[in-house]
Image 1 (tube, one colour):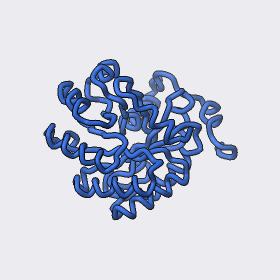
Image 2 (cartoon, rainbow, N blue to C red):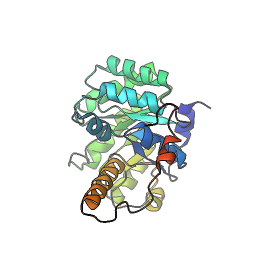
Image 3 (cartoon, rainbow, N blue to C red):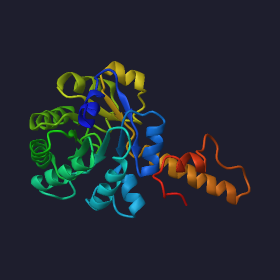
Length: 258
């Protein structure tokens, strides 16, 4: 079974899998070590680590570098490529083809900055060029504060017609809207963790995939800052389970210790 087939098989409506989104190789390796069936990337985490803006097409190289590193993990990897990094549909297809050559199983493409017509063309170009990559097409209606169900269904249906393998609607937090999306769309539905609805209920609603987005990166940074502040104040630091130096280095390629 190819990584694409393995990743596609994880998308079972009513049995959602949780996709942790990594921001570097270490975080991805730890997620893999803990038994998660796949790992994604977070564009915010990648941008913050590089000191560049998110969602502005500025991290094309960093995203490719992280994809190359994560592809060494023994599980499917899907990569957030924003709206295609400002490339033409053919250029995005070339970029995704390069990711596929690295071993990437899927990509996430969003319409927030480029609009639905452009994303539809990009999805079609990518699937024509690289059919063995899972394309998750993201409709940003709810995410950008425009919770229009009919417009969301229209966009998602067009992305599905263009060849998208899955559909992502971040920001949707209404159970009735989620159920309607599942009912009216013929592709697996992906939602974002943090909408106040637990995994068990999302399963009942028919969701197939739940992504963490930038949440885990923000949790990690918040914990690091809190620990530093506690140490400075002479207080105990590091509540919860903390991987040891040995735990982390055991997951890294040889020669990476330091």
